Structure formats: structure tokens, C-alpha cells
Length: 80
Image (cartoon, rainbow, N blue to C red):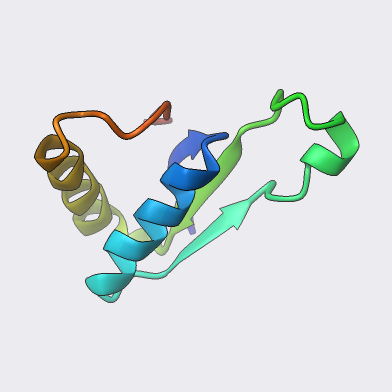
């Protein structure tokens, strides 16, 4: 698994799960339950992970979807 992006935006995570799922790419969200430890301060971003063989496709699909929505998808950051 490799990290595609980081975000605390739960709507964005749901959206990316949907758009990648439509293309047959499964994701795993790491640090999803860290808010229990941090007191819901969103200090620890959730990491959206994909299989290393799907990384390039997943990134292209996500970036295309972001462009289609005029970039209005919430906050996220790429790690690489």
C-alpha cells in the first residue's frame, strides 16, 4: 500500500472512495479512528492508501475528477 493523499475531510474521503471504487480501485483509510485519541481536533490527517500497482491510475482518476468539479473538493495534500 502507498499513500495517495492525506485529508481530514470526511466528505472528500467518501467521494474518493466512490470515484475510485467505480474504476475498481479499492482504498484503505489509515488513521481513521485517531480522532478518538486526539479529541477530534483534526490534528492527525487520515491517509488514503491504494495498492502500489493502482497508484498512478488512482492519482490520474482523482486529479481528473477534481478538474471536473472545478477544484472544489475540500482540503487535501499529496505526500509525494
